[in-house]
Length: 170
Image (cartoon, rainbow, N blue to C red; front, side):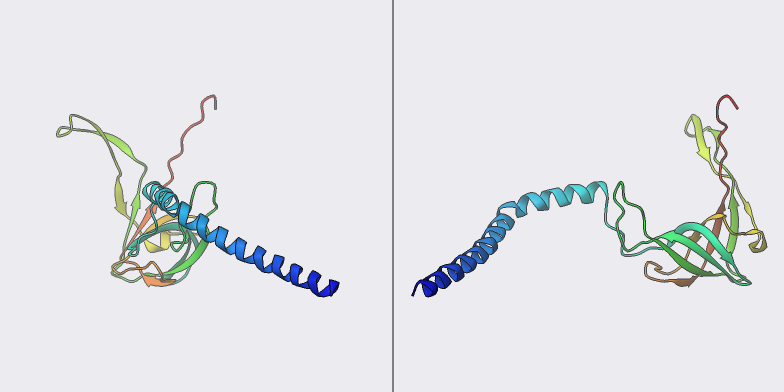
């Protein structure tokens, strides 16, 4: 009889503990759902979720082929918050005779009559596919949504020349 009572009490305590845990988490979720929604909206306003349509990406050339480039670029499927390392993906870019290739030189400041002040301007010049090499920083533009594509044709390739900033004292 004593063992039966002990067994019933133990089972009752286990069932009560499990029921209390679920009841407590549900109550907390209901209580804080408005606050969680408010904080999520604040995060979304500062760090918006990734767009559903993407027509250009930037990255670094990892490989060049006869009619393609392989670039390494941050993943478009996950939002990157401060302090997080981006997940890197490789994408194969198909280049055709219709692909426009340009080189964007470092930004310069030119006086604008319309603005009445100096404005930043990028100088662009035609560039050849054969001049692109591993390690070059590029922007790839496409005519279709490329968010989930690992291989796609490029409409335009912009090779970005890095601006070297002199360090004082050197």
